[in-house]
Image (tube, rainbow, N blue to C red; front, side, top):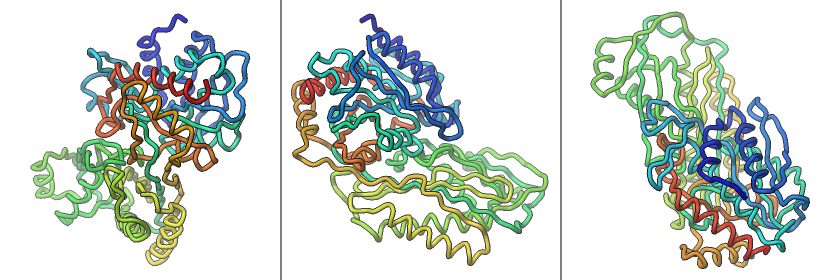
Length: 459
C-alpha cells in the first residue's frame, strides 16, 4: 500500500469541514485514502445546518460489515477557526510541521485520527474482515448529528464503538453529559437604541467549553465591563459555537466620552457608530437571568462533584450572543456529571423561561440543541478489556480515565452499543483554540493501538 500519512494529513486539513460548511470535502479526501489502502466505502447522505453532509462508512473490499463487530469512529467536522489573526503559527487550513508537532485546524480535534484508523483497518487480519469498519461522522461539534443518523438508520449494528477524541493515548470509559440551550428572544415593541453609540470590542481567550477556566469569555467580560460602568447594552455580537469559550465580543452602548476612556484604558477597541437601531437591552436582561437560572437548576439537581473528572464539578459556558434587529439569540451550555438528567433540567428551564417571558411580555423559545447523557462503560465489557490489553501491549497507561467533555460515545451507549473514547493529541487547552497542535509520534502510536484493539477484540 503506497500511503503517505503526512501528504494525506495536508489534504485533510486543507479540506474545510467546519460544521456549518459541510464535511463533503473531508469525505472526498478520506474516500481517496480508503481507495489507496484497498478499502471500500459508502455514504449516508444528509442535509444538516442547511448544507450537504455525509457519514462515511469504510470496510474491507467485498465484505460488508456484519452485526456484532467493532466500529472505529472519527468525526470529520471541526469548529470554526475563530479570529484568523489569533492563528500565529499557520493558516488554520494549512498543515505546518515543526519537528514532531503538527499545527492546523482539526489536527487534534480530530480529523487526523481518521487516517491512522483507516491504516489500521487496512492492516486488519483476514479473520477480522466483516467484523470491523470505520465511520466518519458529520456535525459532531453541533449536536453529534452524524452519530445520531447512524444509530437511527444503522446499515449494520456494531457491538462496540471506539470514538476518536484527543485523549493523549489514554482510554476514556466515562465522560460528562452535555446540555446546550439555544435561546431566541423577540420583542414585539422594541425601544429604540440611542442614535449616538460606542461599539466596544472586547477580546478574551478561546478554550473548549468543558474547561472554561482555561479561557477568558469575551461575552462575560464585555457584560461585566458594562455593568461595572452602568452602561446599558443595546446590541451585542460574540462567539460562534456553544462549546467554545468566545474570544471576541462587540457590544454597542450609548456614547459617553468617559466610557470610551475607561474602555480604552482596559485595552478594549472602541469605535463610534450611529444610525437607527432597536435596543435588545430588555431581552438581554431576561436572557442573562435565564442563564443564571440554568446554573441554579443544575447545581440543585445532581451531585456537587465527581472526583473522577477534571473539573470535578458541573461547568457552564456562554458561547454565543447575537443581535438581529429586535431579536436576540443566545447559546449557553452545561457539562453535567453522572447523576444529572439533561431532559429533566431542560423541562425546568423551559418552565422558568415561559414564566420570565410572560412577565416581560416578550416571545421566547428554547431549543434543546443538545441533551446528551453522561457515559460510563461497565467494567466487564469486552471492549474495555481489549482496550486495556492494547495499551499494555504498547506500554501505555492502561487504567481508563474520565473525560470532562461529551462525545459521540454517549450516542452509541444510548443505542445499546458499548463505547470508549481514545485518540492522540491533547484536548485541554488545545482543542477549539488557535494554533491547535498534534504530536506526530502520538498519531502514529494511535495507529498501532487501533491495530492492537482490532486484533484483541475481533481478530
